[in-house]
Length: 85
View 1 (cartoon, rainbow, N blue to C red):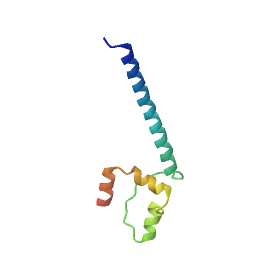
View 2: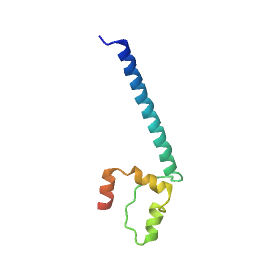
View 3: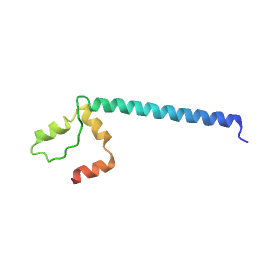
View 4: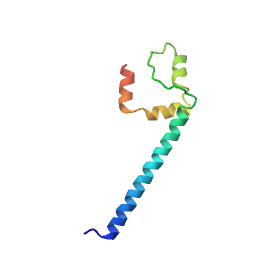
């Protein structure tokens, strides 16, 4: 039989995990809302830039907070697919 103290410890661990998941999802949605602020219909467009200004217009300035956020959000498959295209 499982001791009541073990059940309580298990319940506390599950509660902490659920709380952590809720916080992570909430923070992620807040960052995503900031990143896509002002974009009405997001879409994916892949084309080769012709000049350096085209790159800046597409991905933003080096110190732009949204650019850093987008780089953080890239998944490993995106890091492989986008350059290979």
